Length: 124
Image 1 (cartoon, helix red, strand yellow):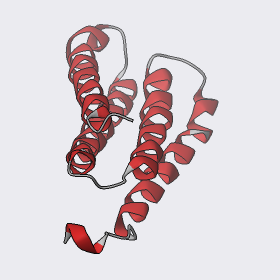
Image 2: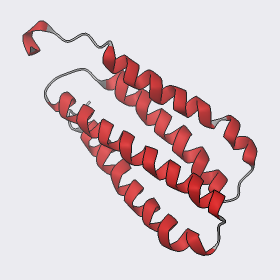
Image 3: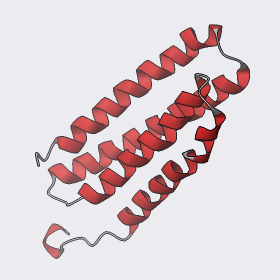
Image 4: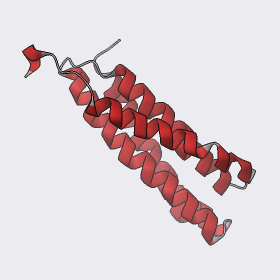
């Protein structure tokens, strides 16, 4: 896999976060209630924060660290967590809220994987 892969994925996440944040602030405001806007804002915040986390992991990948499992876990968590919140804010069924914690759990697991990552001695 290209060492810059996760940098590119992070950039894509962050670009999407800006676009969806702008849509929430301008376009969605006209057709959604305050609760839906709050859900949208939460989804965008988590997309931004974890996109920045992926950016940092992408830098580690460029430096030669093996971060694939960590980054993939975070990316899946982003898609499930923020994705279900975005869909609910757009009026899709509220039962999607039962799936959202799976995404949050994936995000937690991803960061814990980083905590317990073994660093090779030659990279210290």
